[in-house]
Image (cartoon, rainbow, N blue to C red; front, top):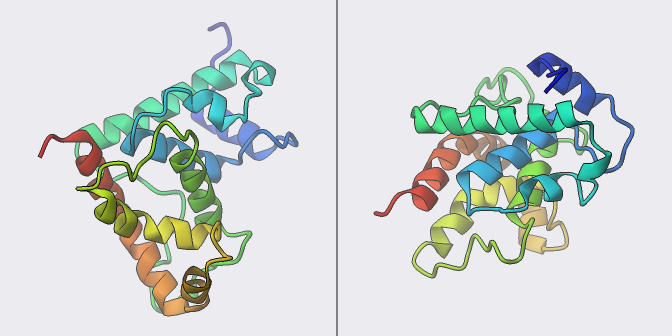
Length: 185
């Protein structure tokens, strides 16, 4: 790689792209997190850029791979994933932004996009773990707004207290999902 990007340069690239095939840095983090903690997604890079990988500069591809590797290393070192949102989620004095433009919604959309990124990689295929997966991914699904046509999920999304609880559960849920998919127990 002749011109590798620093992490900050990678984030700047993602956040300043006008391409409809490039997620912003927060949504990309959600996407990469899901590819690390969940079922294998063999074509994750292609899914991330919606089949337009050839239009992405090589140094960006390299930076994305290094970023994903660092997320994996965090989990393998039993370090909670540092999420790009939520510094105020546990602070009752500060109202958390759950609008469609918020970081937590963007991150959740990226996560859910990867979760459903390949029909061959069904997170719910194992009957023994399907219920656990559903419970652990519920916060991301609700916060993403992806299933707003579902009346129960739409109702949950209107409950600010429920959303705060869900936001606060994401970090622990990610660890549980990783263990669920990556241990033999």
